[in-house]
Image 1: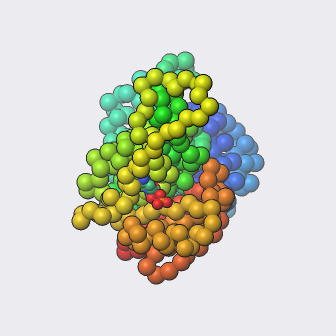
Image 2: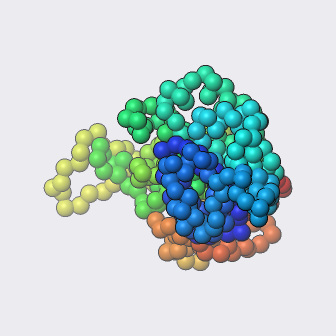
Image 3: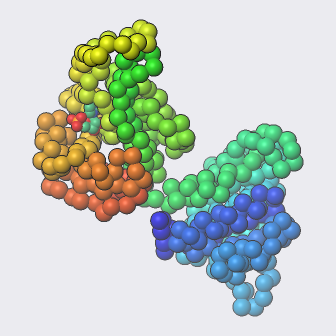
Length: 398
Ligand code: C5P
């Protein structure tokens, strides 16, 4: 995915062992289409050679204020036209110098002279991170509008365990991509449901479906990227699906639990997006003990589950409600029918064969103005398109 096509990123690298992760980050940025100008402090060149970054970025690397005549105004020129400066790793020393407005090497100088956003990814020994001076500096930088990414806790290069470990290259990449997205949902609260539900038959069995939750999680992420405060109510999805971008995540199993979680989280929400594939029916009663085999036929009585979306949309104080219609045929007819029946401003329709369980999707949006097909793509790209449409319908501008 060319997520950063046309973007120019200045990647500052300071002298910490995590500098090796900046090499991988450079590769990810370049692969996503960005032009990357790497600026290294003198200490950084002791950990990883400038040649490594030059090869990965395919461009000259900046290492000194005194790089020669043809680069005379590097401290200003490098950041002009850049979309962001990201310093990873950012050592305690660099953060201290930055906080105090020092400009005693190329990287601090261009940070002072920049006219684009600055993000830093601290990386240091846990004691250094915990020092009041470092904590003061980081708080001051955040107050000055610098975005602080991490650090995280874990095993450190020195063998100690604690907070101060730099985020992984992929996490920094994801955070930067998120940072660069348009922010039409700033100040809005969005509640989403995602995944399947599981309706117990007995202690080990139940009724469910093949929804992976990927589309709901991608939408939660796209809403967070757009600046919203996100609450995600997730049915039983694969454990590896992280939702770091959500402000709150509530894991549920059954439709009744999902309904209760939604109704509890609902007050104050501006948007409700029901992506979950909620089971339409549940066993009238779950057996207390495992059902034993033997009988040639087994009849299970099912009762209808409440329709969470219809219930929310019918409230007098309903947020902007978005429904999903996953159909195996007659998409337009069924999706528009659902929109009218549940009185929704927007329904996202897709054919199950185009999206369920996979990493890509092709959706069509149904609203009062008509039918809007979105281009097929990865679920996050599709989710960003849906969020843009929601923001437009809600008349949210950046
Ligand atoms: O009517 P149908 O189940 O196809 O509607 C799908 C839409 O309604 C989805 O947005 C889904 O999340 C939501 N839904 C719900 N509660 C149910 C069934 C569906 O919120 N019990």
